[in-house]
Image: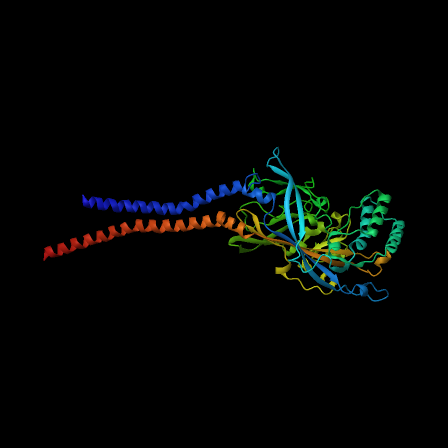
Length: 507
């Protein structure tokens, strides 16, 4: 009876050990399936989900830093009867603003499938003196954005009406430039450069154009509407309710399902999200697309490396050099530069976006013309060569949720000054000059409290399950193999005893 109990106990131990090993093998599968289901539910843009609260109002502290280029040889550049000299530029800044991003006028379009949501993106910025290198009253000598842009804007207005700008208009422009003492280079405060100012030249020319063509030119300023409701644009995106792989993908911008600025349907597409999130369960090899309303086009980023931000694992993505390549190297960019006769279409590093800026000759690039071939950088002196770590546009995403946990959206604004023989103020310009004005870094890093929440929701449970899996497998293996080992030893012991007994008997 005792022998039976002993054997039964050993058999039960083997069975329990086997069960524990099996549990250790399947617990990860069960956990992963349950984890994915919960994550998919919480990743939908719907009231009450984890996704919704941060989507409706970005909690991560976000800052915009402006770095301006101060011209140190303005008088020499404008001096009459002297040989042309390149503008010499000195970078100043940063001038830092705390940015508050939120959405209003939100309503769900329940009749659509997959479901979409409409909203208006709000942006409010507040100057942060402590983080800044100076005050907004600091003076900067730079290109006069209004004086340098107005002829191009006037030409754009007439071209939109399939007309050539009449010579009488140029005569009137010359008179206005002279009467307002407008020059291509001027000195204004940082606040004026960034957010606009009252300008007699602009007012007079805008009135002239309005009287001549009936077209009203909108207020001019590099970022004049950024802190104003006039610059709060409306969007539509997929909620992910019916298709999680479409979560936060933009479907309409300013009530348009595609743009009308560029030379092909592909370039006019609204691709990707706003960059703050991507659909959940990212695939490392896939490109991440996002639409940037400031430059009126979609861009993409590719995977760079795995990183850890505040204990949260993330994937870093950056815009590759091919985004700013000329059409000769990257035919996909031809639609962003339709005038192939222009030298601007034969060099890497910058894109003209005048068609979405009411004709204003604005070019965008990476800071310090990163990814350029030197053509634009060599138009001026004084700018340090670009540095990838300081000047690239990069985003770090938590791959399960698709949430951005670190962002550095970097972009440079340049003004293209074209030879305009009919305007006397341009008599020093004999060829295209791309003049850097300012570069911006919109940066954000997940705060410790939010990072701890992500760690607790995403990382810690997986670590606990992994440790539990190891414990179950080890314990189960010991329970399973121990009795088996005992039976094997017992078996051979019995064999040896019988053999010894047989030998003794023969003797």
